[in-house]
Length: 450
Image (cartoon, rainbow, N blue to C red; front, side):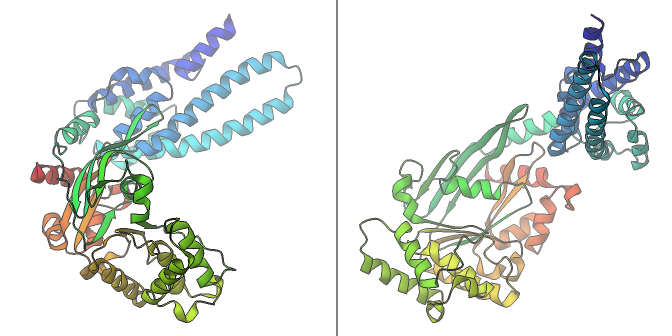
């Protein structure tokens, strides 16, 4: 019976001593107040694990909240297992050492997460950073918890649920009209089930991209750029309608896969193959089955001409320069002559001159009537070659949202920044080195297109 009571005390208060129970009860009361101030139900404070995760949401550190929560649950589980195991084992010296090592490792992990989460809370509540000293010890953390949770002087800059509701309210309820020519995207949401709740990765992205346009895709880390590209090319279906030249990408995926070229950041080529054999293999995979060997060879020759690879067609891939490898990687996807051409950082590892040459070639491809969408982390050196820019931003609900789609000059005026890299900085979170204005621009754009 006593073991059961001790286990219950550990589960609720993470301690079995009277002092520990009182300290943890005060901490839980403080967290309850913080959650309520941030627009979250206070009873989450009573649930181990969930308490830490919800606290991290209040701090704007949801990603750290997962580790903070799991490490806390693991420590409680280890204590309970230890308590029962030691009563069943006579020779417990080895077990004690093993458990001690695990406890130290978990404590270190949890310590780091705690500092990040509480540092975020102090920023949200405009509390001086020196208060972090009290968070170095779990036995003192109840002091800032009660202070933030129950002192009226301290109020959060934003409420988690209110921000989520406002962003949802301002979501574009309309849709982009479907064009007979070009790419039409009407994405309601892209969700996954993760941790304690359904997570929305992307929401409310509507746009039309005309044929012949070269489009820059911008967004900070975690804004959903890759998820968006996977959604429009059909690789990861979303709750969306995506049509290319009037044909539904999802309903007719097998047919439309030849209309899409996707060049990932990593180069997937065998080093011991020649350029010619690499492209011939690509032609077998990417061209329809009814295309003859002669036609495949003709198409390979055309692509080698376009990307300047004929002089090195018999060279091994491993002997090519960085720029040549990039052009070969792009050529493999261009074999099928796609209407929609997507490239993820094609200039990665290239110097300014080589990158410029590559983007000029992509510009020529777009000028033939293709749609070219490009992710690059150095957009300003080639920005004059693009027609439009898509800016994705991660809002306070950690959902990728559309902060802008339109012309380059329009983006400069909308964000009040001259350079594209400055635009990305403006929507990045402050802890990522940005200005933390994602919500502001997402709501501003939603109002403009409503």
